[in-house]
Image (cartoon, rainbow, N blue to C red; front, side, top):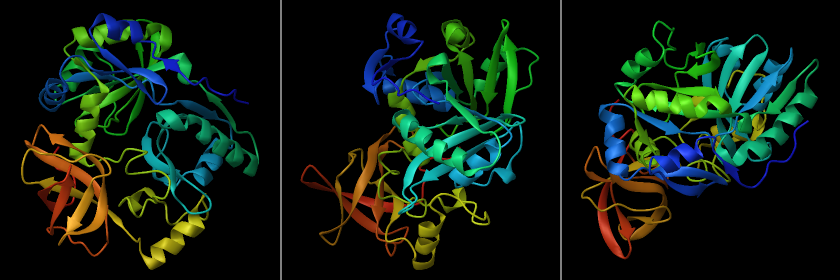
Length: 364
């Protein structure tokens, strides 16, 4: 049903990024822009104005058929009955044995018996395998196709993104938060969802690959500054959003990541339900917390978190927060470490004081 993916990909926008001075790096097998000269300026532009990101490294799988709903309902943790056609939902795919998060995913319900499912960059292959298992379990028709290389994904984000979109699509219906609409632009059909990874208002736009360059130029002309994945990462960290391979992945369950709300506990069954229920009864052995450092120094992944000189946890993501002007981090800590506790982080052999907090680190 699906051919193996090549190990390296190039965004349909690669030549555009190069022409605009984008610094391209290998990101999960994709050549993607990390910045266009200044992560700090791009970050602040998103918080204050509007930016456009190329997020084409995300996978896109079209799932259709009269049993598509049933297959996704079993495979994914969240309850699709909570939404309907024209809505999107954040959800998880779990390992059947220990309920760790195989991937965190956005589902766009685009039409009757049709969904676009967006797994993370490196996880499209494993997701397709799991989807095949789900399709085999249900009665009726469930077809799926990896269409990642046929389209681009643009994320327009920031408080002024609405002005950009009105200029770009005059008179068109705009999706609300987690809404999904179809818009025709220059005779090209776009699918636009009110989703993002920055904590700001905005949308993500599914555009055929052949039209991606023209759309990118139009978005930039309408007022959105090009921004790279470096700023996208600092923006998501300020919001406390998890990143697969850091806060989610092997050994990490939704409960440990503080994402129990992503689980449809009333569903009769879903992949990984039994081990997750067992953990719910005993309580997770660790919890994801935020760390707000007292100064501008910041930790990186793997740095030790200390209490009274003893190691109690490890940083999963850390960076300097442009909005707060301080170091921030996410870390797994014992469940008895309360919000408000004072801890320390070992930053290259020097102790940095930090306070345990509940993200986000900034308000929307």
